Length: 381
Ligand SMILES: Cc1ncc(COP(=O)(O)O)c(C=O)c1O
Image (cartoon, protein in one colour):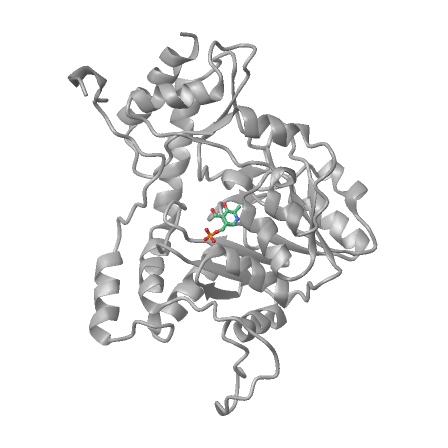
């Protein structure tokens, strides 16, 4: 390879930021010998994260996907039921519904916020619908008043997939306190991470107890351990080592949130008013925590298509990614018997023309400036 082909910088699309007491807490857990799911950090992490969300109960799990499954099981979602989800989301949202035997039913995204289009939910409800599962996509809270109103009108539960939105707010309340039950992910690229991990949070004591019961193979929550199990449960426990990282992360949650939001402001500033580049819209009611800074390209206004831009950025040492593929295009969901017919034009557009830009909390301003300069340089070549 010739020297001039080697990019001068390498900026990954995301990386974890471990800027607090992670090492200290993990070391302590190791020294104490508490490396499985017993140990003080699991409880401390659950309590602190629930408090951060503004709710009473946190139930740690080993990843975000199973946290959603656990929440659905606690709500009693089962075979024959339907759950409304956005068509524009990550596959885990739909997969968790399929695990229960229920069917996910898709609703297209709103063209501005890229969240579930609340005006299109009602037409998808049937006598089998049991819950609505909004996803605060890329950290942008959904229009929860409208969603809760619809749920109340039709007697449905609201279970939020908050995997991407730690600390995001709607009308001054945090994601986690806006629904009957909410599931988070702490995967390595999330605003708060435990490496792999998840948590269910809720204010409902009964739902919390069910989550604790089902996540631990349905061992009785009280009384002697007699190894008699009334129900089939799951081993979705989080280890004390992961929770040690999680506690250190929650202690810094506000700081990390600010960093992520500041990065988003810089992207918007450096790419302001560029014809052909559209950002996800925050509503007046919400605080988007910008898990991933994403842009949508208008191919008619720019000289390159999305994949060409991704390739161009790669040649400049910048990693970017395509956005999610819509649920109606997922072969696994078709094979699982989900209805993948219907039109989802907003999702189609996001899938074809959207990309993630580097979004780690600790990106430097000069990195973001460099990325934006390369985008501008690469758009009309
Ligand atoms: C919207 C959404 N839901 C669920 C998940 C699943 O979380 P995990 O990877 O921790 O299983 C993710 C992960 O990125 C996600 O983005």
